[in-house]
Image (cartoon, rainbow, N blue to C red; front, top):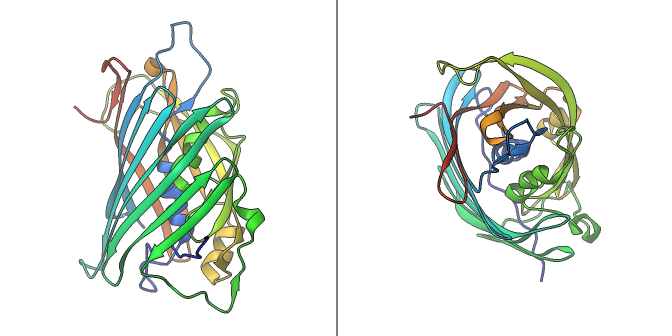
Length: 297
């Protein structure tokens, strides 16, 4: 039986933090473990394990971190995310640990389950989502939260073909290598069904990572359009995000692994931008050989 659920609030306190469901969506974008880029003259060695750490800032102030780990073993995949947030001198704290698993098929990843456990200043709980070959077949939250009167209803058709947040970004790796931004992610986070439509915005010159030697290269920048479909309230923040052109992700090519990794993710709010910036990314192949290490030792 499908049960309506709600996702935990990531940011609050007017004038400082703001409730933003697309904040989770952008955290999910940080989980984009690798994105194919055109093959070079050297043989490609695609990573089977990816570990990445991102710093989270709000208006330039550090408010937390996000760690992502992925592993592909044959046709099975496991994705893990760990986000920690702290603001207002520690008055607001939140931590969420998410896990997704499933299979990789010819048409992309097919999730089997998704779990988010969260603990915050005002609320603790968990969200579970189950999938079958058609899409979402179950969802629950502990403790339950009532549906608000002004909430846009979630319809059964919205759940067909939807992916959990972690699996959705993995789906980008199955797309065209020549047009990495030409993608639409269909996401169900346990409460809300929404689309994230990516489009090519341009390129920006960049070194590998701040302070790390290496040749200059161009970051591929994708604009991200947030489109809520069901299970949401049309608050001022939801409206701002749906109309904004400022949500974007910049991906940095890693020629040694023939992939690109998300380097920076920008989320606009009514009070400033939330930015996730990669601090360390490690890529290894199935033989435990390191393909690339960016920003770390």
